[in-house]
Length: 409
Image (tube, rainbow, N blue to C red; front, top):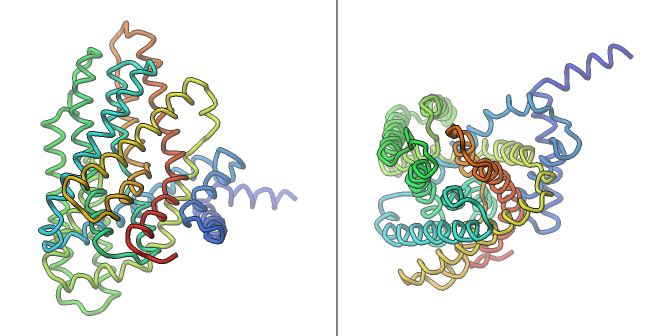
């Protein structure tokens, strides 16, 4: 009996055992979700809820943190895939339209969420930061659903473009608002000011462009898919970790790498093809781990429930309304105008990361209890939004892709 106990104790804390459980449970719940016409992602997220702290706590927190490397790899490959869609031909055809739609939906979301939370008595500087955080959209769910449905066409091109620009726009907007709010609260904006933010963005893009060029050069004359995969992953891991070590997000870096790679030679489509067999288990791991981060019990507080509901509804209206207005302005096809906004609802890593920046601010001595309570509420409100949008967002995105892209169920 003692040997069994020691064996279980060993398995319980081993990350590979946890990874195995995550993939198996995620697979079967993903299949179950598919049987009831929901995206696999929804099943993966529920698998995370079951395995994590919300229910049975089968995977301990320390092991969950060790598995975070899979999250970084999956996000990097997702961003690389999005960048691979930005050929010069598409950019010339869609660039202006994508920029207008992205700008309008970011601003509409920011203004609506900030206004609603201010009316719900969240301190004004914190409401402004919440509005900026609300503008973030999660690319992972979008890319996974597009690949699962094997969707392509103008709708998908527009979707990839808006999702890619959204993250850059969100970071810039947040940096401006964070600096303003810091001044209102008696805190210097410091390294999060607009000039620093733009510098970071340019550095991220520059490292990604260099990474894409190096991948192109080192795989140019190689015909073996296995050799290309080894070299590509080696460079991908290296520059991704470099950017993370500099305290920056690898999303824009990998989007830039993918964009450079696809524009240097049409033959580089083969490089994206060799990555495809890796993506199903990585995406499953990514979304199960995302589900494990969520804890619906913290949303039972009436104040958090009210503010979170306001945040979610205002964000949905801002995202959909901003996309609809932008599409109307640039005169896109009516299917894109009517359905593209639904694909903007998923929300995850970027929003949580920006929320962590806000809640880690060092407040001056004598800060009012209302401000301290507001900062605490902001973190819970963002997590509540992520929880709801990661569950409801993927089915809505799938519905929108099918309808907006003229696909059959």
